[in-house]
Image (cartoon, rainbow, N blue to C red):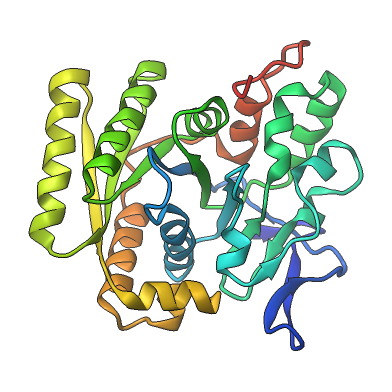
Amino acid sequence: MNYQTFRPKKASYDMDTSLLRAVPSTPKPLPSSENVITRTIAVTSGKGGVGKSTISVNMAISLAKMDMKVLLIDGDLGLANINVLMGIIPEYNIYDVIQGKKDLSEIIISTNFGIDIIAGANGISQLADITRKQRQSFLKQMEDCTGYDVVLVDTGAGVGANVMGLVLATDEVLVVTTPEPTAVTDAYGMIKSIVAHNPQTSIRLIVNRVLSALEAKRVADRLKSISSQFLNASVESLGFVFEETLVQKSIRSQKPHVTLFPNSKSAACIRHIGTKVGSNSKLIQGDGLRGFFHKLTGGNTDEPLGILT
């Protein structure tokens, strides 16, 4: 893989707070390779509190351990917490790039966990309102960021405009649910909204916090069945994650679960899901990170209108 003249800054430990802090440093090369086709994948849910962000972080790290270059974008505009789960304090967000205050290399943070992140991406909601000049400048920077194998976008919950804008801009969608009836119902609502906007979207399901493999299969089979019957949609079951108190300990410790408790059953489940994501290309020709933001900002039109409006 080739590298250009700048790359994301490195997060470092702050010994006084025991948190990883993003500190200013000399910009380093972002990954770039004409041979890499970047897959953009949204991790979303119909209901909050199902463990979507925890799965996003740990799956991203699992993919990185498979020698994949991974960028994780926190797209939860209201409750951005990817950085919290990793003990990182961000300094800047996408809006700083849009305003010309920072370069892309200054908001992408290279973590000690083997992945790069755009943390607390609160500026995403403003992407629909940027001018043509801002759009062109922003997308030009995306051209220098083509070497990622996978870009994971952790969205907010629900089917609001901002969430759906992020979901529909990606190549693939992973819907996270739990066995609770309300979560299953809301997961179906999310699938229904995705299919209504783009029936060709690749949708896969993760059942989190299950007590047994049988419970996970029952939930997955139910969602697959009703999606097929009422939406004429094919939903693939990607895997499940066991309920374990160790996950909550990881969250309180602000350390990714797959690194803090790598031998736990739940960590093994997440690694298994990561393996399936990493090995299952499904012949999807992704548009890459630039294509993702291109869709969000409304393409090459003169009007500042995008998917998020």
